[in-house]
Length: 155
Image: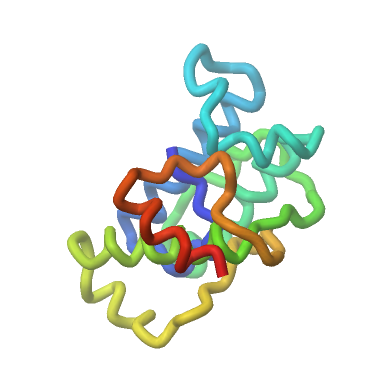
């Protein structure tokens, strides 16, 4: 499960569809409708709000807006609890880590999609998030190879 802190505009078609599916799964988990994924690290920031269902609904709403902007027809009726939620914080380190991670994925999966973002050095966050200074989030699963790069991402 990957619930990107990055703005969904950066995701290619496969990435946006996957994000929609995974955020819907997260919604089900946060509503107590699944057996698995209950302790998935990507859900920590939603659980810490005290209103995780509101926040995942707001997260999904922004993904839906991006899908409609591109002409996709995602079913907005699948968002269980439409509503508004305040901003969640995302560290600059986390956003940079995800940006590097996404660019690496897109280099192989869809280089032509990545090309349009070659000038982006500071990516926009998902509309639910507000950027603050700090390192990669403690809940992020970083491989040994990636951790050697994390010093550069913490700025």
